[in-house]
Image (tube, rainbow, N blue to C red):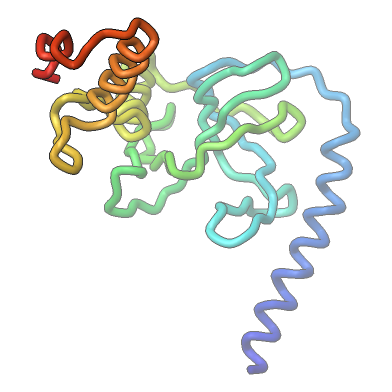
Amino acid sequence: MQIIDEQYKEKVLKMIEWTKYKFRLHIRQKTLYFDEREIWWASVGINIGCEIDGKNDQFERPVLIYKKISPSAFWAIPLSTKDKKSNYYIKIKDNDKENRILIVSQLRLLSINRLQRKLGKISTDDYDQIVENIDSLVIKKRNPLSKKVNGNLGAFTRKAKSIIVLYTTSTNLSNTNLANIKHL
């Protein structure tokens, strides 16, 4: 029980330090220019549960600027040097040709106030490959007619049938006229 209490106490103290530092980040006025494909040290903080934490006294870790949302906000993907076997971990090389791992499952919106210093920029080809990998993870491209659901042809067909029923109800078509569209 004593070990758990010490670990809990250590985490609470780190969260208190992070909260103090976060106030300083919030009020600072910093003019930075950033762009997609850049890798920056960013203060990601001490977080909850499985959310990735920053390190050191600035609670930072390297992040890839995945998508610039505005001049002051962006989607960031944290980097690590530890690889895990998962589709949500993508290997890249930074400017120093050092292997880094993008942790796609930790993608999140960050403020420009969290940026500390620029590390470098990845190539356009590497970035395009990352975008393609993330698209394949996030966007499931399926043919709506490819899977049968409860003996029907899925949500697409059920929706089409609903539209036909509404149409036939509103136009007073008889069931004999529906024979032409029974193949749905």
